[in-house]
Image: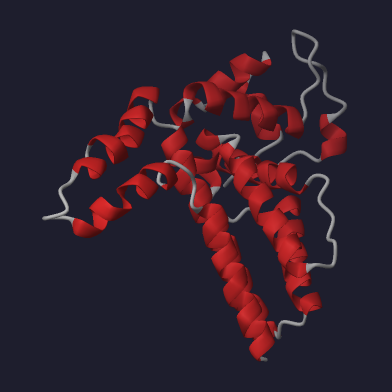
Length: 233
């Protein structure tokens, strides 16, 4: 069975590490994010994390039940970063747009962590706060409960799916990223109209749009659909 996590007040009584650092859940998560950024998911181990914190790896298990529990904390921290400073305005479309774009941006700021956490359900405080906020925005706007859940489901899954997709591109080696972007100009733009008429006519626009995230467009389309259903009663 996993070990019980030591309560926060008892952790605070522990001595600092050899370098004088006082460990905390927030510091461990921050250090884990740095390791993910520098080494990818394969580089996030208890041993490497202990070295980075100048602490025995076993100390981490006073704060987390295991590396999976730490993963959930990382995901929740990203959501917390997204929500920091956000306040509802009472304009439901603007509020949902802001939440979606904030969450998407927070994950893309840590693409390695995004790949590790976008498909997880943390059940932690920041995730619960985000869910409560989205549901409240929809209910306050007048959406019936079944429609609220329907829009909420699509909104959250779409946001996280695009975060994972865009993060995957950002974690590619630079050469691969450049090659993928160049493909729209080197291959698609040169296809003859005789064999690929639709691609040929769209090629200039594709070369511009396909190297950017489609999330803002998809988000607006979702909001348009939700608004139409709200107005139709």
